[in-house]
Length: 390
Image (cartoon, rainbow, N blue to C red; front, side, top):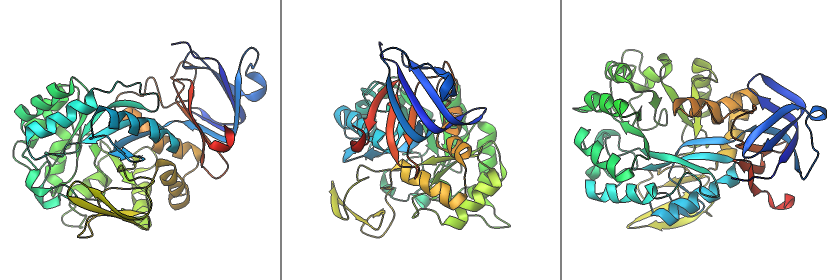
């Protein structure tokens, strides 16, 4: 891949060793070639130059279902377009959230559609598939159809893995269900990460799943057994066990600010990953929107089923990042951790992306002084520029 050199200058550049004031990054051949104070980064030759207030590693959305009118579960074209559009919010890597369907055959067909899309979409990297369903609890089904949930089955897992042609990177499971622990062991043996969520598990059941290899909590607080001082549940395990990376939706709807702050103070910037749980309606106007036989209502920053149940988020990633700065008081280094580095580590891609350092993939987001996206760079290519910059 022949990518022309680019230099980005920013008031602050967030690197693994600290924030460089008045820094610059040079990218060549899709990778980061140099990082330093602006005066020390060469700009000679045919080099495009971008400027902004803050340069961070590109955002990684571990858990997203769609964006900008396109659904990751709607076939290869829809999945590709969702990945191309999501760069508007600073996301450079995403995982397609799937798992809905009335039968294993139907679920496998949806998985096969998304799996047909290569990682290189022309937008964000579609790094793989996240199976949020169907191995979840009917008691904590959230917006998932309770008639379509299934007990964890290694045989079913293998059907889905085959349909995905190796593109499944994570399974979600309710650890209290029969067969869950064996399922976790089998998934980990295949090199697939496991998260815990949509679950009514006791603390002890959650710990057993952690010891079997689970490493992520699915949208912490939402659709899981709540904390009680005598029955800590899965929420308590997320606070107490460092092995779990806690997904967090910070759209201002799914989680109260005080709960988010308590989690941040308990786990620190190293224990949380911002996610959107975003739907295809992200960016849609308020109103009633049809999705098959289900009408979804978008209003006041939330998306709900007819019975009022939250049906996922409609908040883009950069808005959640701004909420993190405001609600959590997170500084730029902490924002980089919870928006990128922690997710990359959990998914085993931290050796090549999610750090502004020489030799890493040039997956970056350039922000203005209010943390709105100016430009998104994937593999050294500018895949999005705010219209005023174009």
